[in-house]
Length: 147
Image 1 (cartoon, rainbow, N blue to C red):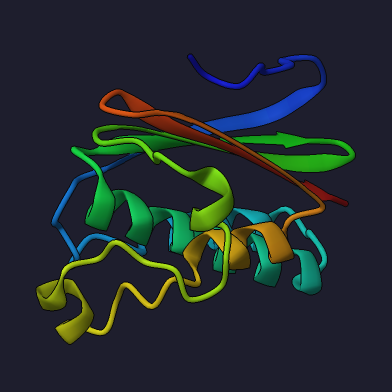
Image 2: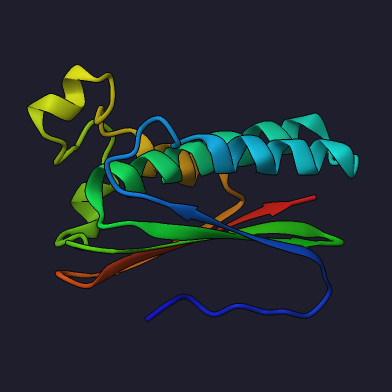
């Protein structure tokens, strides 16, 4: 189901749970990841890209899934972020990757979310981006940020 992981050279690994429909908690993982990266001296431009991409992922999990998790692997040469959720999946990945495309409800949009920029922003911020999804089962994303 989930994109392959390489546990070689892992200096630090953290896991964060993300609940569905919990917008008050969305952003906690990206904030904690940002703090960890700052503490270990990662370049601020990389931290910014990681924080943006991870926040977008958290919001997408909260909006579109039944919940999920974010795993962070910090290595000597890169940061890898794995996002896994359960739920409806994505029927058309190429459509979902288009800027502005969204399946968010009117209520979600009224909260200021669901503009259809989450996946495109994750892709743009990452040095390497992979997504897989199966309808009615899951969505999995791997984002790599070179150091």
